[in-house]
Structure formats: structure tokens, C-alpha cells
Image 1 (cartoon, rainbow, N blue to C red):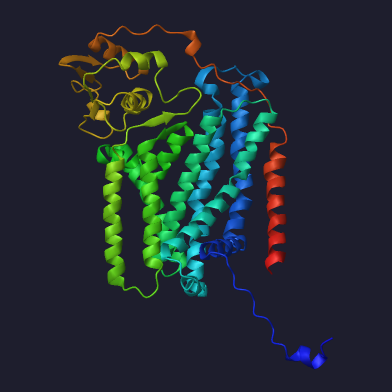
Image 2 (tube, rainbow, N blue to C red):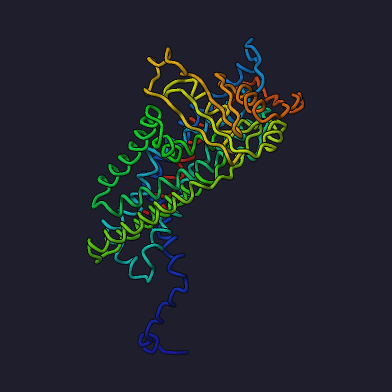
Amino acid sequence: MPSRRALSQKAPSPAAPSRKAPFLWLLEKEWRDLLVSRGWWVLLLAMGPVVGLSFLSAMRTYAEVSGLNGGAAGVGEALSPLIGVWAPTFSACELAAVFLLPFVAIRLVAGDRQSGALKLELQQGMPPIGLIAAKAIVALAGWILAMLPPLSALLLWKSYGGTLYAPELAALAGGHILNAALTIALGAAAAAVAEHPSTAAILTLGVTVGTWVLNFFAAVQGGWAERAASYTPEALVAEFQHGLVPLDAVLIALVLILTGLGLAAVWIRMGATARRRLIETAGIAALAVLAIYACSFARPSWDLSENRANSFPEADERALLRIHEPLSIEVHLAPEDPRRSDLEHRALSKLRRLLPDVRVSYVSATSIGLFEQTAAGYGEIRYTLGGRHTISRATTEEGVLEAIYSLAGVKPPEESDDAVYRGHPLAAEPKGAAMVFFALCPGLTLAAAILVKKRFS
């Protein structure tokens, strides 16, 4: 048996070096930072009540239209759960992504710079883009956890006897996750460029307000602004909320996400000169512009809605696909004329998705069209197909199809009752929903926050 003196003379064995990859180490570190982030817990705490307000309001309206309490039972698209319940319920995610999520992303990036942890992270041999990628992955994981309240609404709806259509719900959730990724990339870029988190928050809010201004300008002026506004986060979410997945919008969103993360990686580096950062920023911006321009020509899209709200009936689509001549449509309606919006959403957007050789041009002298009503030709929709012309004033889907069929000499397909979407009426009270969203969700969030604080304090 060794003596006490011999034991005391033994040197302590060195700690075994960690075999964990630097990226995995960084993921764990960022996850701990997220767990102690007050902004993330505020996001979790707010999601339950905000989702609850949206879900309860949508459910009561849906139930009344379905015939609850003596109301007239609705039919058709008015009783599509996607439009009637899930789009307004998940709209809480859009609000949270705009006003709360940016602070979570900014804190993950700017917090390390202020605390000095960024120097230690850069010493782990990780490239700057790896640092930003780890922070973005953790922030997106935190957002997915924040989406548990709207996802729990699906279980409540099912318990009331409602039906679920997985493809349209996947499109809806995927759209909000993509929008959140855009917000995270924007927040990361702003936090890397700015010297202080408050400045980064102002930059992020400025970009968000800028997209709203662009949407307003597009609604008034049309033209190039209308085309650009179709790729803003607001327009992206709106398409996904209707079950439509356009490839061009998805690709452009991915380009913008990579651009934001790339800019964050450029500006988070320590020691690089401002001139070098500006040159690299200009290069990334130029590549992004070229990529966005190329992606705008991607035509495929997928209508995942159960009621095919974004597509013509299948019989009409088969008839239209037999038309191989270029189709030109000239619309004499002002941008703010409600008939133009009606025509675009009910017919022309569906036509563009189906036929590759469709060219639509809008003609107007003013933006509101109020004083053009008496002008000759205002309100006309002029169709040209293979040298043949016709004029119509109908802005409905049926009117547009009738004009095209008459020009092409195609016999309109016979209407079939089998293809009509009947809807899913549900005259049920949202019992227990208030307790779940206003008590259970906040209570579980507070309990988890207390446990985490004890764990890391």
C-alpha cells in the first residue's frame, strides 16, 4: 500500500482533451445562450395568447358560417379550413417573426461581440460562416419550438371533429419557417454590421418597414414595384397560407437567406479592414442580384390546397393545355381598381402558372382610375391569340376562360359536380382552447424558464 507521502507527490492526471468537433461545441454553446436569452422566453410566452386570440376568433366565425347558433350553413371555399381557420391562426407566427424574433437573432450575434466571447469562438478554428451558421441553426430551432402553440391548435381542431389535409398544412408551416429564416438572416446581418444591438434592431425594423412601403407603392403604381413586391416576406407568407408553393419565390428567399448570412460572416470577422469588408459586401450583393434575377424565371409551382384555390378545374386545365399559340392579354384597369385585383387573383395568376406563353400587360393613365371611368376603352380586357382578337369586360374566372376558348376554337369542358369542392363545415364551440392558450401554454413556459434559470444560475 503506497504511503501518504507518495500519494501526495503524484501529479494530478491532465484532463482528457475534448474530441468534440468545434462546430458541435459551438452548437451546444449557442443553445445554452438561447436558453438564457430573455428575448426568446418573451417570444415563447407571447405565442400562446396571440395564437389563442387568432384561433378562437377564427373558430367562432367558422362555426357560425357552418350553422352554429342558427347561422346559415356555408358551402364551398367559405368553409375551407385552410382559409377559414389555419391562415388566421398561423398569422400570429408572422407577427412574432416581425416584432420578436429579430431580437433573438440579434442577441445571439451581438451578445458575443459585447461579452468578448467572439474572440474565443474565432480561436476554435471555425470559419466565420460556420459561426454564423451555428447561430442561425440554433435560432431556427428556437423558432420551431415557439411554433408549438399553433401546432397544438391542430390537435384541438381534430378533437372537435375537424378534418386535416396534410399537404396544405405542410405548405403553411413551411412558409412560416422560411419567413422566420429570412428574419434570422436579416437580424444576423444587422447585428454583425452594427456596433450595438439597439442599432441592429433599428436596421432590421427599417428593412421590414421598407418592404411594407414597397407593397404599398406597388398597390398604387403597379409596374416593376408590383413585380418586386411579389417576393417580399409578406407576399411569400400569403402564398403559402393559400397552399401555393412557387419555386421562384422559394429560391429567391433562399438566396436572400444566404446573402444575409454571408454578410454577417463578412462583418463579424475581427481585424479585417473596412475597405476589404466593403469590397466583399459589394461582391456578395452583386452575386445576390444576379441569382435573384435568374431565379425569377423559375416557373414551376405547386398548388397543395385541398380546394385547388390557386388552380383552374382539372377539366379546364386539360383544355387550356391544348392551346399552343402565344396568348397576349391587355388589361385597361388602374392599379387600385378592385376589378384588377379580382382579375389577377381569380384568373390571371392561375393562367400564368399553367401556360408558359402568356403575356399580361396593364394599361392605365392614373393609379386609382376614378377619372378614367368615362374614357373610351377603360375596363376592357383585350385578348390576342394567333392573330385573332377579342374584347371582354368580365373579370371573373368564367369570363376569362370563355374569351380564351372562343379565340382558340376550343370547346369548353362540361361542368362536373364531382370536381366541386364541398368544404368541411364544423359547427363546434372551441371548448378548452382558452384554457390551453391563455393558461397552460404560459404556465408551462414560465415553469420551464424557472427550471432553466436554476440550472444555469
